[in-house]
Length: 543
Image (cartoon, rainbow, N blue to C red; front, side, top):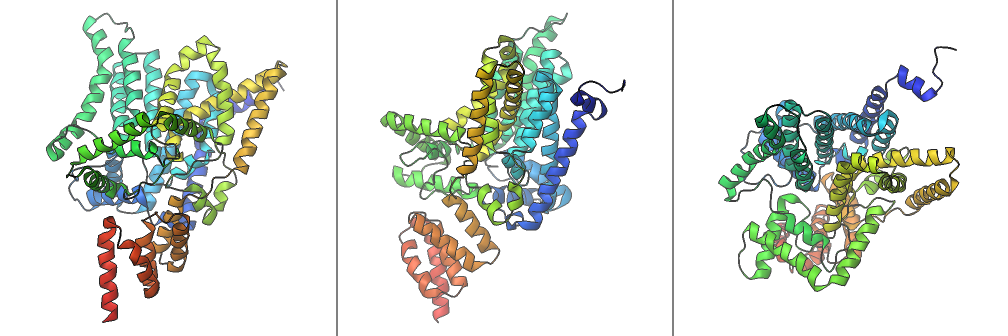
């Protein structure tokens, strides 16, 4: 048949564009995930931890018309974005989930364009499929958290960078600077990436007959990015007397991942809440109590930075072991769970989500194979170094702070691209009969996949607390009681479980048992308010 090309892949590409396939696959899959989540998980209606705060703040600003508070906390841009959604659609979570899914689909399409510029359509298609089928990515499309939006903005920024390298148009430079500012406002850890890549544009030669325009084109992205940050900085200056665009909670995050009890992933600090709404207050109280004087929020943040650095300099050997442990967690085939637990929610409510999704065990070994071949090829290295710099900075943040699936999500688009290249390298080695390269690579990938399915992480104590909280909010008090008792058995110093358990017991009319656990609560000054409420309630019942 004369009209059919030799290659089936090229035939498919000619008849059905890869970009259309990617759009169709991602749309079907993400909408299925949204519907399945809303129908089956109580988490869909009961938000927890950061999600609850982001949504409450967005509803108060966008729907109720309340003023913006002194601090927007982390990811101020995401909070305002959610507020805009609530202003348009009302305080209905379903619309927020749908918007998140649309952003996820748009991200996949942007990534397709980005990777196509670097390595052709087929590698781009395969890398996008890897991203679509990476379970945490699908999972976070239905969470009121800034990760999906952050990846979208960073992907747009990287795509614009490569477009400017091809052609320095004024409109590209302006939009590039805008996306640089938006990236920093959505996630502070993007700042080094934005600065490095914008400085790269600044140092490049611009071919233009006008000397003024040559200089303007080089500095324009930096100026635009700065202009995006200034409104937030001036707003915080008027409210808090500090010229900054984000909340000062970097110190507590740093100390969480660098202390005597740290395990490399998220580690609870007694007296400090996971909820961002109360975390700032808790860290200020904690730091003031231990310093012997009242500290401002900024002083409290510096206090935790110093404590983290003291640990590093006082125990260098322990810290190096901790960094090595973080490296192992980063490369671990099974996911490293933070507060927002996937494994537990899937097991309890969403078992179908485990059926056809990939995990880190598929991506990481293929990406490692690709990195080896890239560093042996100068042309590939010169083309891909901005992507590799981004990967290095994002991974470094995980090692400096702590490793979690939520923050590892930022690595996924780049690792998926490298994994697609790695898969192609293995196929090429097999075709060229270079078995000494192909066979070890295949064995590495297979062993990683087997390990990932045989080493599911144990359910974390924070995840159990989240589940207990969800049961409590859905009035399943017997279930929440069992969960909180199990947490206390696992760790008697997990103090947040005590008021939750007491509340569950009181609602089940188990007053004597509640009194037993209140003895523990009486010795915890940070929960004095809860103790007084419970004590007042019991005295009212006894009258």
